[in-house]
Length: 264
Figure 1: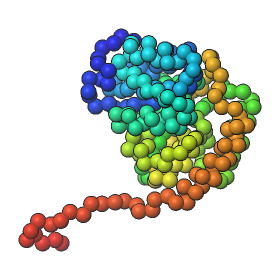
Figure 2 (figure 1 turned 90 degrees about the vertical axis):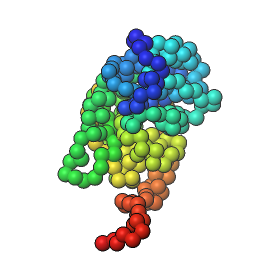
Figure 3 (figure 1 turned 60 degrees about the vertical axis):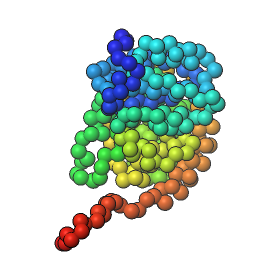
C-alpha cells in the first residue's frame, strides 16, 4: 500500500476504526492489514492493532507495517491481558464514530466489513428499536469438528440462560457505534457476550452472513476445555448484569425559561 497521508488521516474526522487484537500472530499480520486497507480504500479510516505482549515476530511485523501503512496505529501491552482487554485498549484510543472488530488470525474476511456497516446503518425492521450492532454469522465455518461441537454447546448455554438468539455470538467480526460500545460493561471475556450486552442497552443485533477461512499460520490461543469452563463462569456473571440493566429509558434535558417568558 502506498503511503499518501500523514498517520491518522491528517487530522480529518475518522469514519471508522478497525480494532484488531493479536498475540503471537506473526505471518498473519501484514496480509490482514492490507485486506482491511483495501476494504476501506477511499474512506477516512484507521486500523488499530493491539499487541497483547507477543513473544514471536509480531512486534517487528507490526513495526514494519506501521512504516508502510499510514492508517495503521500500533499499541502494545507490556503484560498479557487477554483479548477483551486488548479490544478495550484500542476502543479507548479509537477516533472513529463507528467501531469494527475482527480477530487477528486471518479467519475473518475484511471485505465483509462494508456489508456489516451497511446493515448497521439501515432502518431497524418493524421499528423494534435502534440498531445496536451488526454481527457476523459464519456461513461455512472452517474449523475442526471438535471446535464446532464446543461452539454448539456454548451457543445452547447462551440461548438457554441468556436468551441470546444470535446464532453465532462467537464470531469475531462485528461493527457498532463507538458511543454504544463505550456504554457496555467491561470485564474479561466480554467480547464473547456482546450480543447480550448490546441488547441490555436497548440495541437490536442484526446478523449478517460472512465468510470464514481456515487458519493458515500459527495456532489458536484458546484451548477448548479451558474456554468451556471459564465460559460457564462468565455466563453467570452476565446473568447478574442483565438483571441489573439500566431502566431509565429516554433521558431529556430540561432547559430553564427566559425571564418573563411563560411556559405552556
